[in-house]
Image (cartoon, rainbow, N blue to C red):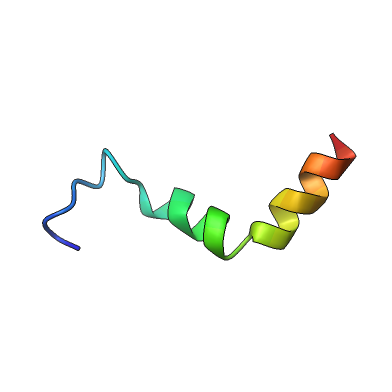
Length: 31
């Protein structure tokens, strides 16, 4: 993971897309 640049691929984004997938879905429906 060190080889990847954090600026190019933030961890919080991956976590949100993978972990908070349900939350994002609910948010999209609410939007």
